[in-house]
Length: 286
Image (cartoon, helix red, strand yellow):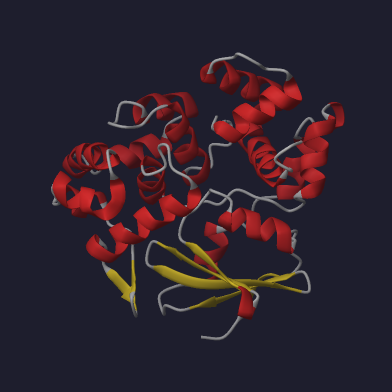
């Protein structure tokens, strides 16, 4: 398949494209330095993406993938510059600095079912470890897409596994929660679509009813899988930046999340991604 232009005048920079794909939103992207590209897998799609002369180009490695599939995943129709401009950077110099350093950063629109699964793997784990768990599940349980590449398993496929089988995939204690959640979702296939269609507060409350899903995992799944941009995930990096830059020391995680939604507004989750990316890139001794 040949390279196709997906966004002719993309707001991405090399830095913000790399951070969008590899910065903890999704876990099935691999950098291809020799090609100055990135290889990604979602649903039944296997795609290479590269940035050339402010043009975002893609090469599909599966015949069923269309340019519109790629644009939808990348949320290409969203006016990201306007969303960034609507954030309170004028009165928040730290946020302004984060936006400047990651100009063009955006939020992916991933398949919700896959996003829930990936973030159930994220408890007490870092990005490289989450990637390994996702690849193990895809290889051993998921359906083949192309040569040596498998999709993430569906919740129905996971429900057919035992907890012992899942533990062999480096899932650790997460295997128990994944198995329990899989049994619930396989028995009620309409549950995740209902959650995706619900308002943010309703969706978050419903997600938190599932085994192993607390506020942070729910907010991540809703932010990166349903485009509910008011979700404000609080992880160790966000705790660190809110303590360092906003003097929110000694606050509980729900208090920090509430502060984020109030201070940053209706697109707080977008602000969160700028803060998260900047904090991870900051010198350790800063």
